[in-house]
Length: 284
Image (cartoon, rainbow, N blue to C red; front, side, top):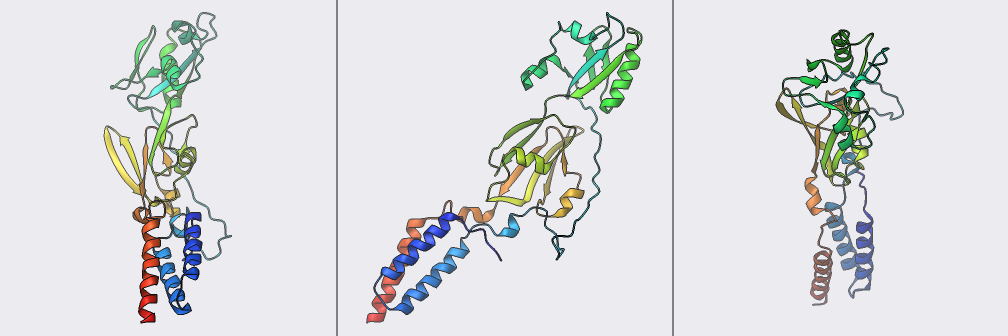
């Protein structure tokens, strides 16, 4: 089984090997001690390659292309979502209708600024617009909500045009990623690998076989473990993340015996003590 050998491991092995060669005693003791060290070294070595590689398969010829049919669902508007609504009309008075009601504030360069100019869907699925009041848009896709709102505005404006977009869509990545935190995105869809790329990927001792996705659906919180080393993740409903998903990368169990925390001084002293004792026994 191939290992990804850390630089720290290599340095440790070279130091102890040189130390063994310098110690007094016969060559057999040195050779046996060195092989004992090798056993300890690989028992505490870094992560095997099979635990690091994404999307593994059982195909012998790795150059064969594989295809997966991915279903991209249109996201529907839910309570507490933030949406940006732009209403335009051929009427001079109706041009940029909502922007006039907000005093012309229509530029934003941060999530906080976007929250000021956006509309939050309340717990009942409504948005409260100027002049026309509350309109229920929860449960609709963006296109459906725009068409519905356009019909409501025809009473007030001539040939209104409505455009709706989600704002402040975000996912949170925690655990053994290089840059944990909350990340905002503007695209319609984001898959789990794109999200991990934003966080700098999973750390060496992160468990790619046990990645927890926490998701809120219809006022319920679900928790699902996915295996990123398996190609089956592409066909999973969790391949594409949703806004407000939380991704938690568990640590590998071997991490606690990894070389990042391994007691180097204890290992060196144990090896040298063993060599000296064996050399003393051989002389007697």
